[in-house]
Length: 235
Image 1 (tube, one colour):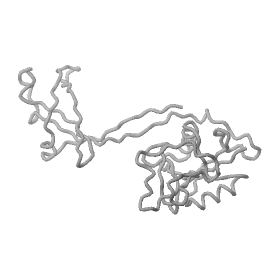
Image 2: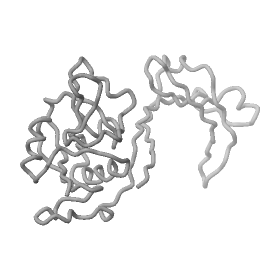
Image 3: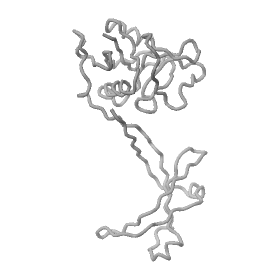
Image 4: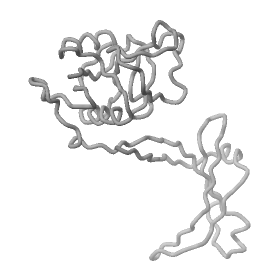
């Protein structure tokens, strides 16, 4: 199951103050015609503003263009502000997931050697774990042991709740030691943290959530926060 990265941008006309923050300009490469409309093709340049941590995409039409015989445009400068909304789109198909082969749990999904189910119930970490224990024999909040399993879990989550995909997984930090373990006592042999995480902000983030900032990525969060969750059991 692969992944592709897509970028989307929101554009707006920049202010004069923003204009003066840019010192180097791109210039039109050539002029082309499409039907009755005249189209100017530009060479784009990116510049990162450290203060705002946003990107500027800027285009200029200045004196150099006159030598090319191009018509001037408004003030001969166009400047746009772009906020980079980078997000990861996982290619997944529910057809690729099998039903659990345990009697009475056929509505659960098979992920690796486990059967898993998404629960659209907002609970804190502890309550979610007890809900999983009551939901199936040997049930716990889900542990993840491979990239494929991580992707498969996200297929299930996105099928049921695309708008709010943040969920509890069964990982937690062992007594503020910096060591992370799975609540089902399986090996911690895979991880997919968002860059910079886990950071145990203010010493209060000890439980593992998935789909914070990036789909499929992990973050440490306060255990008393309420989220939906995925349960699993091994057959």
